[in-house]
Length: 638
Image (cartoon, rainbow, N blue to C red; front, side, top):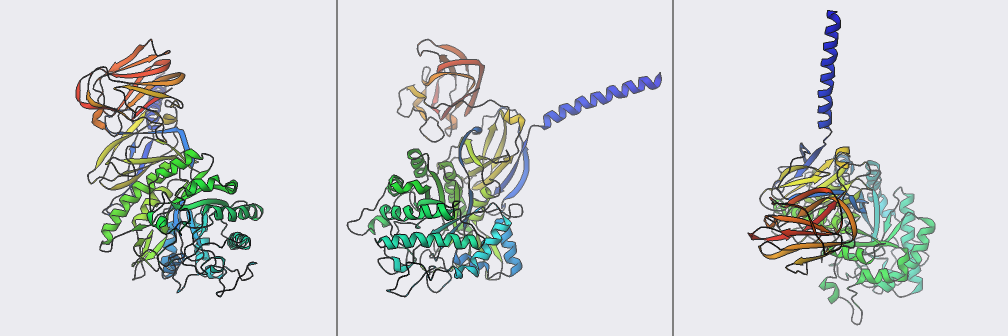
């Protein structure tokens, strides 16, 4: 009997332990975010810090809300270019050090997993050769319309071996190809450094065939080409002695109309991208436009209006003039055409120290490229040279202050540059095929002093959030998703990547309701009280005066919606939250029901209500305060 009692007690104890263990297991299902940080003083270089757990505690800090239910573009990859110069300096390294450098660049596990390369077709300004070259150069006055002299032999020595090694290290690597100039005999100047494409049907056909031959030759050499453009920077007619060619949209269309069917026949994987130039037309490009010609400041729009655009997958952009919002504007005008970002070099002033241009490049690229480009519909983020030497070369014309992802030093070693990290914080964690998802971001590419961020959902279900604090001082903020959150402090000037696995705890949270078609009015009236003013579909409204009872923002959802939570978000103006608020709903805009009221305590107020169906939602101030009352976002969840 005693043994039976002891057995029963042991069983109960085990059951109790099991229950305790189950409770602990349930608690442990709340995921943790892994964190990697890079700081401007190099104290941390993609350093993994301690993981931080999600909790269900409320925070009054600036809150970044990640919402996987809202999706945007899928990602092709992130990287740079193995220019002739990059290949030359990598081959200055010993075989063992070069192999280590390639792993650091392309291996997703041991390095940053560069996943996109934009390769020059022929020479760019970054060449180690004594003269610029193409794959079918002829003596002045001679032509080769049938391309009998075509050869990629130049690339067989260094560039192609590096490309094959890159693809071995990262099999998901995508390759884009771009010419800085066609062979000189196709041009009005008979020179690689100037001129335009001859307006001759034979030349249009020869140029399309030249590009096709390149694609076939690279494929045969083990490097299939995923994307191609017909001209790098077609409005840039002065590259400081480097290869250039002016190519207007009419001529580009004539080449594409021949190239498109050729590629569909022999290399259907290869997509044609248009433009491949700046967010806005540079004044120098306008000044260098030949007399009587249109500078085509609307070049990407005109090209997509050309009948040849049926062969064009989308538009490629560079960073050297304008801002990333140009990509969202084009996406809104042509939502069926994709966007890629394909060039932006770090650079420095003549007197800057390496430490200074590491700091400056990290900040600008993190804000503008890592976050700004990807938040504006780009499927790729690509800098310029993969590797350069300590003098920023070799180069033949063009940029004398450019930097690469790595620098090959005179002693036979290599060092990592700022672009290694601004690209690496994406390429190491965001898998090709990932989809950008919604996240509230209060910074912008012009820099307003706020933390800026971008989020992605990987094919394996994991989430990636990249955040940048450009301020000199640390900033603390909250990351919220699916009803759970964590607080984090980023050092001044730092770039961070947070990742967490797919989690039922987070996935079972409330789902965002679309506000597509909704409109807003306010008192006091404000032209900014409008929904969907940016690509995240948010509103930007402020009372413009001290808070007083009766001020309100009212949203007409367009039709009745059912919701269980209303998020009232004051955004970057953290102190401008409503000190007192009242939430009311209506089905007709005339008869109103108060469903909740309370006191605000910080930027984000989540108002949970019983399941409510309404067409109109109104948030009204009920308190007096010297601060303005601002709203950056109203979100409904069910």
